[in-house]
Image (cartoon, rainbow over all chains, first blue to last red; front, side, top):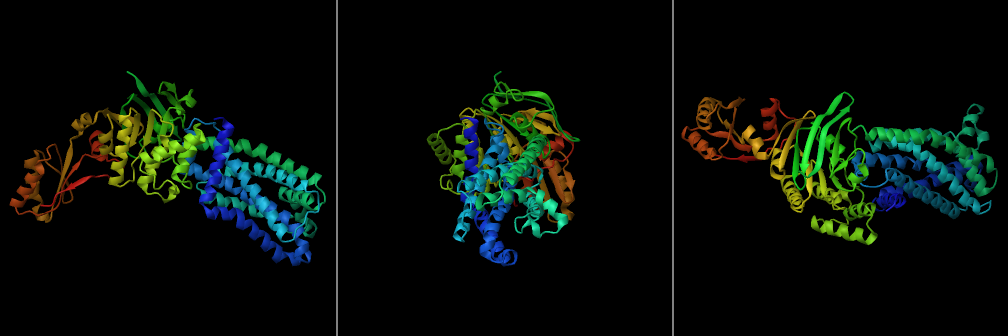
Length: 254
Length: 322
């Protein structure tokens, strides 16, 4: 069996966990829908005048916000494997050194794709209609997954550094809340006070949301997409080596 | 001699703690080595190095003739590992865990399923096969851990404290499974805190403390150094302590250690117990406690190092009520 198959097998294992754990499956299904419904019906009238008008704006935003939150599960799963000893079991097997980590990240990409598609379907049921070519959906998915992959490296670091899975979640969400809320996910950039506008405009979450909006409803795509990719590249270049270094250090420590 | 496992001068330091301070080991093919020691003695570190999970700071080790540092991939194809840290996925079922490992080892889908079925039957886990591991009892969990390390039919098996925390019944079950593996020719390196476990499974025992080997030999050789058993007598009334002391001294042939109202003395002849009971009875002494127990790791330690060992209590006491 080659290392690619080993990675696929380990990804399959991570997804299989979901089938045995309805609660976790709900995290990936009910939670994003709940986000969408809450923001749509609570803020729609105030922000856009009506929920119908807000849907076009908030659907891509919630897709991006959810994407960012779900990356926490990479760290959570990795930390569980490290603390419970599953990771060492794999390391003692004659398989590729990177397969366990790659399998986990790959499985996470599948979960991410599931969340995005689920939100799109629910959006359509609520009345959302594409305002751009349908191929935009695929481009958006690809762009989102590239960014999620980059974010995974941050979460690998969190997963390696944290004492237990609960701390991964605590730290992950605490760090990600301000990042997602200081963005244009919920409200247009123009409505924000000038002094935080620059920060919000440069936030990759804003850029990604803007690109997603462009690809689904029409509007500028190239520039925000490009900057999202630049962010993804920077995050990967910084955090991938750092995470692997921290992982090897943790493995050599006990 | 044909060696399955060999280690020379293994040294490992974690920060300021020296986990291994020059350990030599040699395990002939088809035999069981018991690595005996208290918490923090370095047992787990030694196993992790031999199983290629950790690099030693100094020293060399070979498993099945392959260097664990430079030929780790070859070592990994030959070993099975079970321990507190090398564990299975709690969220998957027993069968899924075994199939997963078989698939990772290169079994086809069908072979993986049949190998998993074989092991589940062999380990008495067929009924629980479809349940997630988190619903398993401690004993079932250890059996599945062991099964998971046997998927690839390794000839060399590392068992790191395989029965710690198990009840006596589950422990005996696991011992029997290990004996079967040994009978099939598997070489086993077993770490334990229980002298009784090393005694019952191992051909040779190595006692380690603070990263060093402090004694080694067969179980009988060790017992000859330590004394076989300990007699504990505690009279109901403190006033009887002196009389009891005199009786125990006379029968055991040596003065007991006084520990509160308890008298403790090493003995070699178990038939002494009924005699002690009769003599105490004749003297009109009622015993609150009268126990003969096998030597524990703590006794080994007390004898070898003069210190008590930091172990979880594993006294298999034989209580006698007069």
